Length: 171
Image (tube, rainbow, N blue to C red; front, side):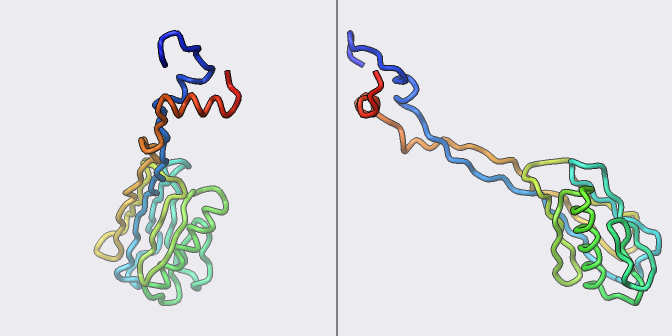
């Protein structure tokens, strides 16, 4: 502003103001890959931690193939890898609905892919006590927080700011 010009209310807030562009974060993902469905040991577990709730334990149990719950993955009935992955998905979905996990799960072949419902880097993880190449777990990884990046293309000049205030009858 020129010397002696009256200061307009809000002037300092407008001149040189940078608009911001929000960039969405990414949710962490992990994979449970079933390598040998018929060799999964009864009573073995997968522990899933979403970084928010208490760690959730899924226990493999030999039943009739229909007894999957939010805590139990039924491995009865001679399942293929895709069947076990689908049963893990059912268990994860039930645990998510119950509020025990904040995750979704998708299945492709013999892999169950878990995705955290929230974006950001949490202490989420998948672990198992099963050994011997029967199944593998990887992740949870790749979570990033949302960010705000300055966008300088919408910066007002002093003259534009004065006109902006005048147009709105701000004095």
